[in-house]
Amino acid sequence: MPHPAPAVFAALLLAASAAGAGEIAPADRRSGFDQMGAETRAIQRDDTANPGMLAVADGAELWARPPAAGAPACADCHGADGTGLRGVAARYPAWDARSDRPIDLQDRIRQCRRDRQGAVPPAYESPDLLALTAFVALQSRGEPIRPPADPRLDRGRAEGRALFAGRMGQLGLSCAICHDDNWGRRLGAAAIPQGHPTGYPLYRLEWQGLGSLQRRLRNCMTGMRAEPFAYGSPEFVALELYLAARAAPLPVETPAVRP
Amino acid sequence: MRPRLAAGLALSLMAATARAEGGLRPYAVVGDAIPASLTGAPGDPARGRAIVADRTRGLCLLCHAGPFPEERFQGDLAPNLAGVGARRSPGALRLRLVDGRVLNPDTIMPSYYSLEGLARVGRAWRDRPILDAAEIEDVVAFLGTLRDAGTDAKP
Image (cartoon, rainbow over all chains, first blue to last red; front, side):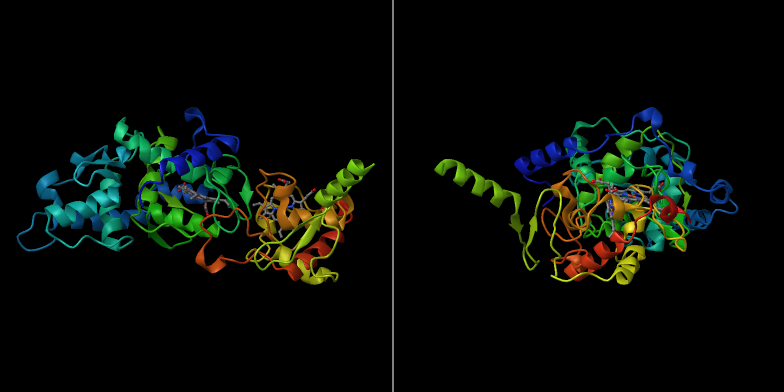
């Protein structure tokens, strides 16, 4: 059920507007980068030390290599070095006319693999999908996040906003309680960031590896003792749409490093 | 006479509304407190301290700081627990743990002994409260020992 019934949805929106200190104004938006220790920041800044760059290198290789004999490589359609995709990551999720719904960057890559390259789409969180996504997103590093003003995305964005504001899980918390109302405070050992999706896929020290934005969101949902949404679910794309609008105009940082 | 008596009776019934939900023990809220133990017996403060300090059971120190010199990285989303046993009666502490929404519908503190109004609870945590009745009593007993906001708070 990708869209809740209108009545349920209206109730969600009402509940959403009633709670909390409210949204963060564009001028006050800060990347999680700013709250990290000096050492972790230095690792992200230095491409020779940033472990995410290894995945980017893998992604560059996958970009150039045909996924199957006779099938085109990504490079055959988009150009050898990937710079043709500059700015793309900064505007996803975007409307996909073929499937008549919003899709995020990793779903776009999976769709290209399947429909245009005749290959099996790489699984969520697989090294190949993370590497390709990191390679594509790197092309937008430094570009301000700018969600498209496409009215077809409004509904997903509003759904994402309601999900962000709604309480869930055994602890009855919401994303907004932590990331709008209590960012900058300490949740036990962790500094609560504003929760912007600027650096994904990114290298998380706690994961000792690269992970997608959806993996991060699943971590937060598990922390709330909520049942996480499935990888690739419409709920996650809706949340990503709202997160992008909420983060603009912060710059893309992929591949970021986080604690 | 008659109407007043009836009204008086209704009021006292309201003040002490017994609340019970699926499988949970019923309890009565009186004013801002649940005066009676959920188990009918007092809790154990030592067990209560262990629950409060345990970040996967009580979770309290994610949000609260308190007199736990051995615990690094205490949260700062909520009031310090030092001296809370002097500020609040055991019954008031119990209601804040069981379901603080009774006092503040917008509270971010989880309702530790309630299944009401929850959405999308994870499979592993479904159909049971965060703490059981005996654990609530242990935590209430421990919080009651935190009498001194000054020295309790010192690391």
